[in-house]
Length: 503
Ligand SMILES: NC(=O)C1=CN([C@@H]2O[C@H](COP(=O)(O)OP(=O)(O)OC[C@H]3O[C@@H](n4cnc5c(N)ncnc54)[C@H](OP(=O)(O)O)[C@@H]3O)[C@@H](O)[C@H]2O)C=CC1
Ligand SMILES: O=C1O[C@H](COP(=O)(O)O)[C@@H](O)[C@H](O)[C@H]1O
Image (cartoon, rainbow, N blue to C red; front, side):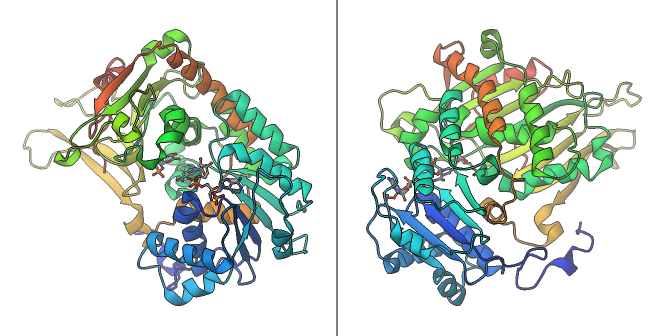
């Protein structure tokens, strides 16, 4: 399938048809870190290459390391070489882009640090967008906001972008929100969730609210259950110290997967505005049925990967990856959630995520209710709408069909499938590209509001506490598998199965 009319909109040089070049000052605090090197600089490079960034823009790296601008540009160039797709990398464009990149050494934990080097780089034009992106450990979010305020750098067009995690529970989230909120208004605070930068996540809204054919059946009358899966093949890697304090619930569910769930479940907003959209997401987060200790025991599963053989090769278990003798941190979880609204009464939402699983796939599966009266000898399988968030971005709908190979009236599943990359004949931008440019433009549609963060933590925290009390014991699963068997039982109890190997 081809996207009607799309080819005329794709520009040969890869520019995005609907966006103009903007001039701005963008300060990245944490400029030598993994996130900046692997994601932010490559994303900015792509936006520059596509003509979205004006040449007078300044991207100013800030960290404690004592580096000259030249040293930092060398590092930035290495990062672009490593992390920009080969077919996007171009020496001349890289050279031009590096001309926008600056560096200042500053310590955010030291109020006495002299900010004059940074201040001299910032434009005095109060209308020019000025963004501070805080890509450091969360304990520095408030001191950074404090230093920005103390140095009187907040103009009418200044924004602050906060990376996840916003806290580790309700209380610590409130401390960060209050601390940053002393200097910045809510309209100036951009809490990032990179899942909202994924085109396929954004597309959930288009599918639902631009296609009445779907929206009319998007409720408990037609939908039997929803599965949200974010499976990863990677282990904990070098992020062990962070991850062991977080676990899968804080790392993936509190933010990314609850955002996906709220987009799948929300009512149509009255307008496509940050306020209306976030109001509707918030209602869903607030409508999640609180998990009692009994629910935690029966409706959650938590597990940690042990040694296994993904693709026939030995992979270490979590403890070995972590380099610790013991840990009760979950690297896998499955939860059966309920949303207490008229639209979703009686429709379980199953969430699962895990590291070192059999395959990398992030999907939303919407299973429709079965035919109430079967006239065929075969019982048709209920239709499933599958949103492939990543990889192989696309959407498919399985339909029961007459099997042409059978003389009798036998049924067989046939699949309507749209592969977005082929349909739109364009590259899929990395999540950070849209998010960075939205922060520059001051558009909060793709960012999380304070009350959403709080509502997410309110639902998550009893589960965290229940697990701390071992209400649901930690299981193990071999690396390279689909998690523990009890996760299957969670669905089997309701008569459902996880849909596997979607990609
Ligand atoms: N990496 C990732 O994939 C993801 C990261 N995040 C979040 O992004 C943030 C950054 O993560 P990541 O890049 O991995 O972390 P890193 O540890 O790799 O980088 C931290 C950065 O902060 C700088 N820094 C540390 N202390 C100070 C200070 N006192 N003043 C100024 N700069 C300081 C460090 O440089 P220096 O030592 O030179 O000061 C470094 O540039 C974290 O909040 C993380 O949770 C979120 C999602 C994914
Ligand atoms: O935020 C995070 O997300 C990644 C998964 O992101 P994806 O875009 O590859 O789905 C996860 O690996 C990481 O632990 C988590 O912090």
